[in-house]
Image (cartoon, rainbow, N blue to C red; front, side, top):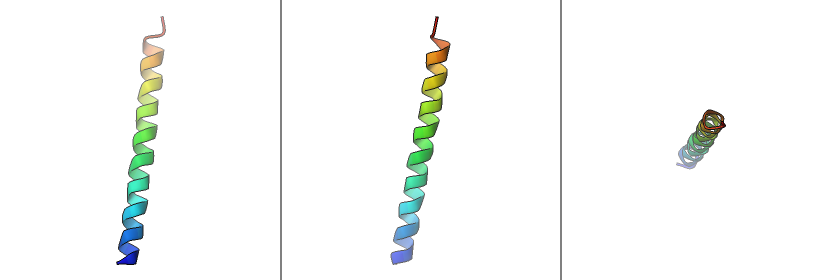
Length: 36
């Protein structure tokens, strides 16, 4: 049970960090696209 909780916590951290990197990369792309 404790191991499953750790695995769940690690997987959630991985998903959050991946989402932040994904969103930041798209923000940089949009800023470059609208940079006249």
